[in-house]
Every structure is written in structure tokens, then in C-alpha cells.
Image 1: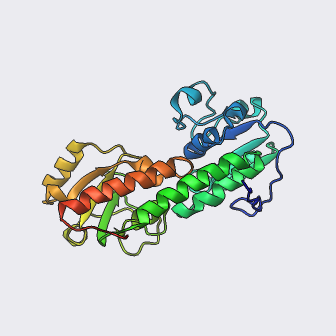
Image 2: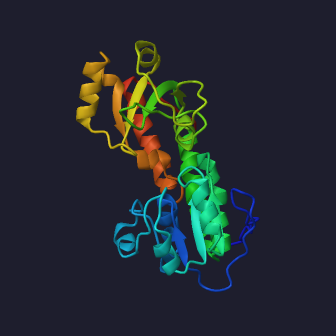
Length: 280
């Protein structure tokens, strides 16, 4: 297999050289933690956040340094990391600046579209000498994306809820919205200055939505939440659906499973109204 050596520049344009010896990696991004294991780097991951849950048995054995917003710097220092991996959406800029004072390499990621997973695989594969493993993930991802795009999905307007009290959704300038767009789903509101806007579920907004999706994260919506919403806002219960937030919002290796999930989820919705054509 001919390997593709990408420029090893992270989301901030910082160049990273391939490691010459085994690294000591701390991941402060749950989906990246899972990706590192998928790349065969589990023995080089020395720390994580308490939100890092996959792969369950492996991460349970790793020390936690805190959350994605606040960490215990003394605990992270004690792990003597050579590399800490961050994400622009999940980790605050101040944290990145603090880490840069004592961590040799801070790698910043920021996938904005599902397709951004390909350079992400190659970035981490190139830095940590896992190019073969990275290309295997690239091939698997591209296959899943091709199968998803094979269908001519009917256009739908969807309201995707991630929080309550207050209600919050996603703008079209997010990874989640672009994952949904792969099956022809356009998120509401159509325009928003905030990437994760606070919403007022008034009649105009609810009538505009063909589907209202309740994510399993960061707020874990339950079926009872859908029933309450339908009653409180006089909204047809058949428009409301639970959706797996990991499958729509996690990049990294889980994005491959996410593409397959979206195909099945959207197909089930489409079949309810009797319309879906497959490109042959």
C-alpha cells in the first residue's frame, strides 16, 4: 500500500514532527481518545477526561485529569505527557494556552464536516507513526460515505435539540448539521450567529420543522421528554424522535459507525412516508 504523507499541521496551522520514540499522550477530547485506540496507540495514551468512555474497558484503566473545560493541572503534569490533544469546540482557548507552558506538543483539532475525518486520521497517524492504520480507517470511512451518498434522500427541515432549560439547538455551521445534511436534512433555524443557539420553540418554528430530533447528548433526552414536549407545545408526537448524539457529533473512528447509523436512521424515516430512491 502506498501511504499518503500529509502535511502534519493541526487546526491552528502548527506543524508537528513525527515522533521518534513512543509518545505519552493525554487526550482531552472523548472522540479523539477513541480514535487513538483505533489507531493502535492505546499503550501510548496515559491520560484522559472523565468524559472519555470508549473503548470502555481500556479507558477505565487510565487516570482522569478532569473534564473538557477544567482539568487538574497538577495531575496532568504528573503524567509527564509529550503530547496533549485538544479540540477548539470542546476545550477553551485559555486551557490550551496554559498547557502550552509545560507540555512539549499541544495538538489542536477542529473537524467541521464529516469529510474532515480523513485529514484527522492522517494527521494523528502521521504524527504517531500509524500511517497504515490511518489509511485503513480512511478506506473504511470513504466506503461508508459512498454508500450513504448512493441514495437520493428527500429534503427535510429538522430541529435538532441538544439541551433543555433553556432549549438549545445547532446552527448549520456545525459538524452535527453537516452530518445531517448528508441525508438531505436541513437544520433549523436557517440562520444563527451562535453555533449552538438558545431557542424558543414557538408555533412558527415547530410548524417549520418536518422532524424534531432529541439528542442523547449532551443532555440525555428520554421518551418521557418527547411526550412532555408534545403536550406542552401542542406538537404532534409523530414528528418527535430520539437520536443517538454520539453518532451525529463524534468525529474520529466513531464517525464511520455514525455514517452507517445515519443511513439506517434516515432510511427508516423515509420509508415511513414511502419515498426513497437509490442511485444505481
